[in-house]
Length: 80
Image (cartoon, rainbow, N blue to C red; front, side, top):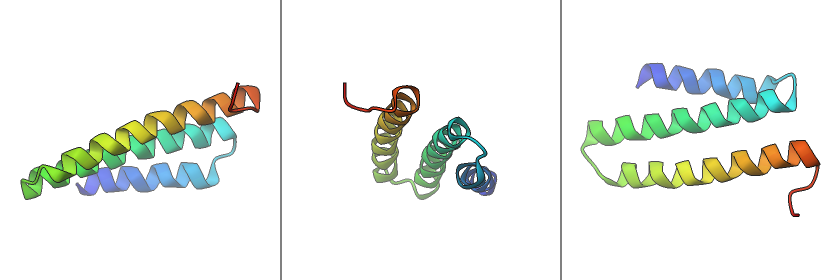
């Protein structure tokens, strides 16, 4: 869990410092995956299924946010 936490910090650094917008989107996606991994590990540690459901919800929101941000970068418009 400590290694995944370190990966989250490094991804957060990429989101905040970025140099370009695609770098920040990639950092946000990496942060999303690391947060899912952290929740899964924490759920296994506590033997509680609620963390797996939370990870599934975060995965769905992460996918949608990555698609929306990428579409915005390409077209500068979200709604078609």
